[in-house]
Image (cartoon, rainbow, N blue to C red; front, side):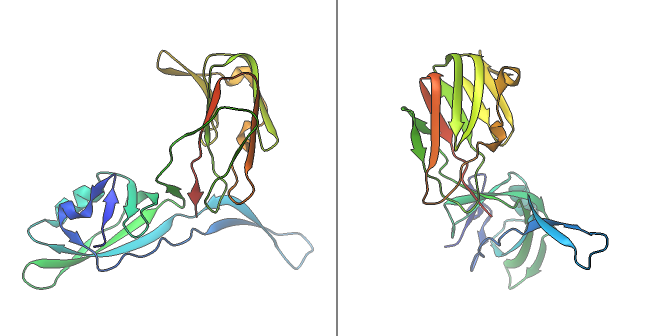
Length: 236
């Protein structure tokens, strides 16, 4: 039976039933348009931004569960998984008005309008540990990903190179975490993250991972015990 999960809690808990579930629509990539003086045509360029995705789920509410209980359940979390695509998750950004319509004595048909973030992420997102340099790492998805690199056993001056982009760290502490999505570099000392951006150099924001048959090239130099990569593979 079709179900959805919100932060791991199934729609079965509020007695929602779905005849079918839609596929996630593809997000639309935004463009910039520039008018050129004296030219009869504008120039349009693609950006790295994507529009949010509208999605309407049609469901049946059976039994004694109230519409308020459905509202509370949907708004209790943000991570959505459809049973028809269990390998990926997306983020609920907004819940529209749920309009019920009675069909029979004890059932309601309801439409659940959602606004979703444009990206879908792989549910299985465990870190992969690389123990020897150089290393290769393949990813899936249809868009480059913004990974997190976690270096342990560090000492002295070190560097990490991903697909030709090198980040250097001067007098590295024991651990170094490079979060490409958050665009920050930090070390965890006594369980407290502390920024070490001022001891680094290099365009680390370009250290993304590309999907496809060609593996990503990763290497490091200096005293580094291992490198763990959380890939954050994604789709639009």
